View (tube, helix red, strand yellow):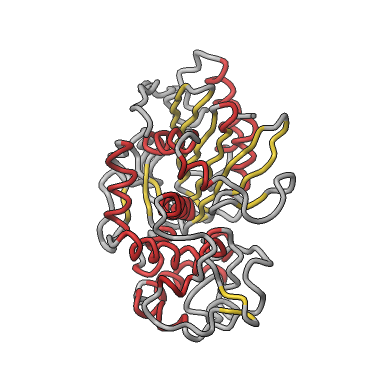
Length: 376
C-alpha cells in the first residue's frame, strides 16, 4: 500500500450528456452509438463490476480526435454521475508537471540535467553524495537519486494496523512543513550511488518541484497556472491547498469504502497535489503528444533503463510498443484516488483514467483497462 501511495488549440469535445437508464448497468453518459463507445462500455462494465468501485472518468484521444466518458458516481452518499469537469486527485501524475517544467528550464538554459542538485539548494548538504558521486538533477527526475521514498525517514508502519496507515500518513504529513523537510534531509545517508538504481521516490519529486520554484523564482501553484492552466485553458486544474478543495471535486475512497483525506500536505504538494478533470487532462495529453515542442520532446527522452523493458525519461515511463512506436505513461495513487495516463505519440492517441477509489489493485486494473481500449 505504501508503494501505491504515493501549445495546443482548444479541442472541440464530443461530450455526451444522457445517462443510461438500465438499472442493471453502471450509470453512464455513454450513448453506445459507435464502435469505440461499445468497446469502452464493455471494458468498463467489467472494471466497475466490483463493489469497491465508485466513479470513473475517461478521456481518450484516438487518431487525434477527443472523446469523453463517465461512469458511476462522485460519491457513495448519493448517485451523482461524474462529468468531464468532475475534479479528481492526480496524485503522482503531478510529478510529470514538475519534470516538464524541468525540461523547459533545460531548453531555456536555466539548469542542466547533469548539474549537482546542491547548486540549487540554499543550505549545505555534504551528505548528498555517495563515495564522491553527487545527486544530479536528472537523478531526481528518473528515480535514481538514492534518496528515501518518504520524509521523514522513519518507520511509521511496521507495528501499525494496515487499516490505519492512511490516517497515520495524513496525521504525520499534515504537521510536516517544507522547513521540516529540508531540515530532515540533512540526516539522509545514501546507501547506493546515484544513477545506478531506480525506485519510486516522493522525496526526489518534492526536491525537484521546490528547485523549479527556485529556478523560476515563483511558487509552484503560480508555475502551474502560468505554464499549463492558462496557455492550455485547463480551467479546472489546480494545486490543492489545506482546507481548500474545489466544489466539483469527487469524494475519494479506499478499497473498503471509507472516505479518505485528500493529499493537501504542504511538504508533498509539488509531488502529488495537483487535481484535475478528464476534460483538462485531455488538453494536457494533447500538449504532451506534440513533440514539436522542444521541452515536451526532451521530457520524453529515456534517461535510465532500456526501452524494451520500460525506460524512465523525466518522470515518464517510456516503453517500446512495437513497430517503432512508444508508449509514454504515468500512474497516480493517493489515499482515495487512482489514475493512469498513457499516450502514443506516433499514432497521436492516448487515454487518461481517473477514479475516486484506491484499493491496492486499482492502478493495475486501470492499466489493464487502458490496454483493452487504446492500442498503439
